[in-house]
Image 1: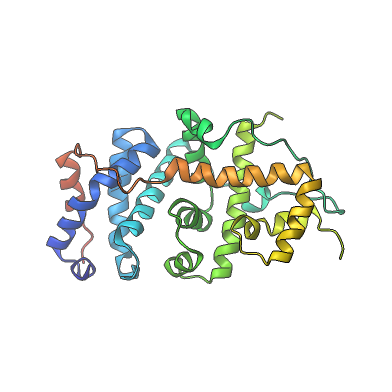
Image 2 (image 1 turned 180 degrees about the vertical axis):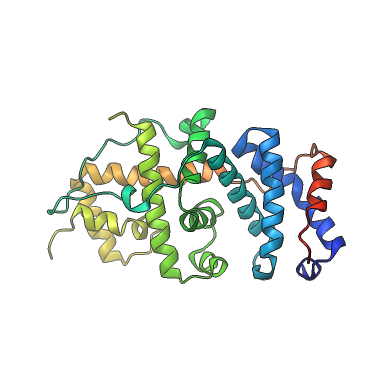
Amino acid sequence: MVGLRKGDHDAFDSFVRLFAPRAMRIARRVLQNEADAADAVQDAFISAMSSIRQFRADCQLATWFQRVVTNAALMKLRSKLRKDIRSIDELAPAFYADGHRIGPKPAWAQTPDEILERSERCRMVHERISQLPEDSRNVVLLRDIQQESTAETARQLGVSESVVKTRLHRARQALRSMIEEELVVA
Amino acid sequence: MPELSCQELIRFLDDYVDDTQPAELRAEFERHLEICPDCVDYLKTYRDTISLARGACAEDPSAPPPDDIPDELIQIILRSRPAG
């Protein structure tokens, strides 16, 4: 870790050889294309090295780098599909003055496991996560995907716990709305 | 005490899902859910969204790393090391 922070060649060599295989697996799953996955892994190592000084020694290097790789793969996916970042505000639920929700739709017919059994549905979920703004995406990656605590997420992102909670709730609502657009026919 | 609205329930749904509410407020949420099928559906799809994100992206730490990483990729990454 100390060597990586100092830019030591041998430390970087070990870091790449140790983490590239798992990074490639994550990128392959998101991108389903060998060349794109290789690009994303390369981007992730460059991104990791440029931010390694901000990395806190008290969090796991593997967990931190997994988020960097997932983010790089999702950004690659979004740029490849030429999809735009979606507005969190526009995806928030809307309400009438009496507090009832506008336009409620029924619960989804399939369970999450059934949805993810179909590769195109799994890809759809990756695409929608990639369309979250970066702040929101990072919170979802840490809290819901890597299952870090609110305190740890706040520490890694350098924000307060209340900011993490607000961002996470709004990100979940936005992601839910985007997935609903795909799963529920109006 | 006035009844909880759908808007109030959804605003604080994360606390309900993460089970970080005081018992009294949680009981109030549950009373609302007993009479509001729209909020039951919203709660279910909110939870499903969390499961979908995790299921689509989570890495199994116990799975062995793949052993088919091209050495050419390793070499490209090593050459791209930013100047320290």
